[in-house]
Image 1: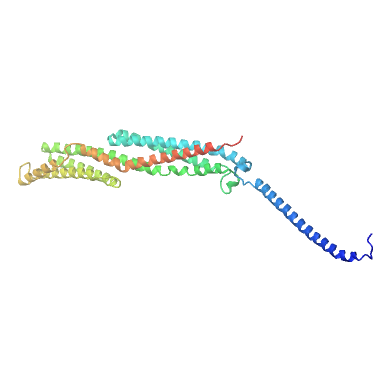
Image 2: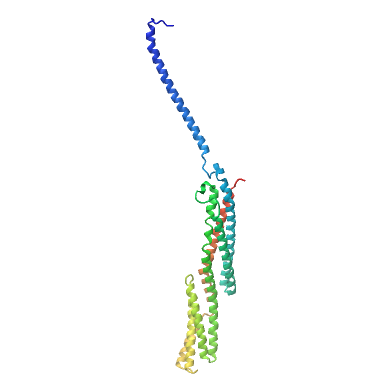
Length: 343
């Protein structure tokens, strides 16, 4: 035990106290640093745990969160895809019929055109029914809609989003087919009108050649009505077709009818005698006859013009729809292969 009277005791005391104080400060600093380091390690570790656990729904890392939704939606989407194929098949059939009808129009086969138009109209009704069924199936897919990213995976959502575009792909077919049938029937009717006109004017000329001028003039009234009907068809076709050849054909035949009527009227007034009026009318008839087409080649040109007008546009519209549906099916098949739902 140190001697209280030792003079070194007073000199060592303050130094020892200072050393103790410094040691305490250093120790406190070290404790703070140590706790800070521990806190950092804990924070980093916690962040890793959170990151490992914080997987958003609808990602492969949290597939279990959308498993039930995917299991419910996938069969419905696959069934709708099969229905999409049914729609495409019906449109394929309609397109084939339209192409056949186009060929029949160009060939001037009125019977075949009418039969194909009837067939195509029934096929269009089937397209509409299948498309309506597709729309109902798409609307009935479960688990999709607002907030569906929390219920189904992105792959299922992507398939559904693509599928929603398909029911409206056939919406323009009805108008296209109406345009097609209207032009097809007009073209077929046009050919029949031109042939009928030739027969009617020929019958009038036959009566005039045996001196039955009044009867001949009455028959020309029938020819005039056919010309008027032909011009009405021409006016409808003018919206989509170059009708210049048709107009020339109709005008020249109408001019001949007028000249022939003038000849018969002058002969009737002259009681069959050759007068100046008869000579002038006869010259007019000869000039009009010379302007008539010598063969049916203009008819072929007319049919080609019609085919290149509304008919082609209608067929192209149907083919475009076929292409859109085929692309949609390819997209669904590709996305379907990318989706492998766990059993």
